[in-house]
Image (cartoon, rainbow, N blue to C red; front, side):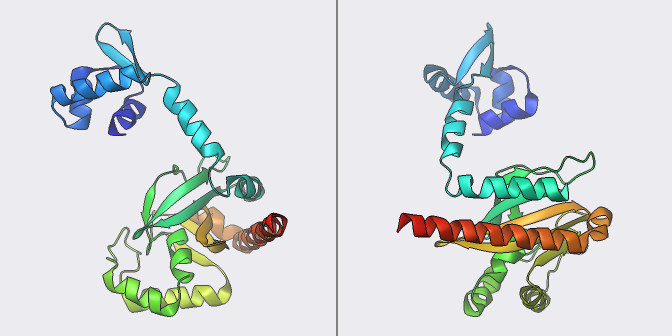
Length: 242
């Protein structure tokens, strides 16, 4: 995977020595890796000594993504939420002690919050992370926080466990979770948690702090409406399956 990420970063054909430097691995190991990927149709020669990925990885990824759990139900609602708010909308899930972004629908504005599917964020400093923590039962949350490292990501990250518990309790009462510069400076994000069968997800709206504050109430309303729409679609699917 690091090899493909190296090509994504370079955006140009690479030689064996360049691949080895990017991976921090011996050229002999990279040679065997390259030969295996060439044999499976994932790499091809552009010049006598330079390589580039074929479209095969893209086709495999597209086939996998088309059958991603809940994708068909969530994507239309989250796309509409992005279009309505004109800010970046994110779908995430807990991944150990972090949040993994599953889908990112970037806003259309020139200045916006940018992220990628697969990005990993701390539970305590990200808006979706807070929403996922807020979905836990009190005992489970207390136990998790005993072992969760509350490292500062920015100058405003909450690193005190009692303060985080207070923030989560207040957020549960008001029905949404928020970070204001706690994960990315000058970015405000709003989120809610979703329970789809046995899985728990979080959806968030994120954008520049000043612009988000101007339409805070509208964005909160839009987020709640989207959450309710997803819950109803999930209920209808469950009834149809039965």
